[in-house]
Image (tube, one colour):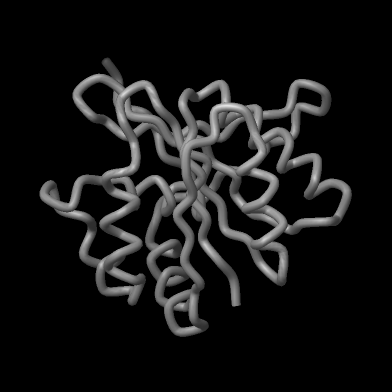
Length: 163
């Protein structure tokens, strides 16, 4: 089983710094996290995913399909959250909280945490500058399998639309 955690921050810089700190925890093998993704809203409410890299190593902090799936959770329910995600069995309260969590100018750090590290990760995020709140949910094996099926339908790389 794993958990999804969305940590909301005042700014994208605060969220990126928290992501770097989380990557350091992951490197120290204290926490195993996947797809550490910074999510912001751009002009017009567009959801923007930032799969940053660490300057020291050039390695990705996260990204890929779990990160893209996490970004989809921020779509406004009224605009049509993809049916596959709604039907996967995620807690509807979690989906509602996530879709309304971002103000323009704010940012969220989204990640899936496996094994028993969720409390450690949540505590580490709560102590970071700019931290506002956290939204989390536990993924039952059936929900995780359904979300994996949704991921398998996502493209391996998503291109930004050309201006």
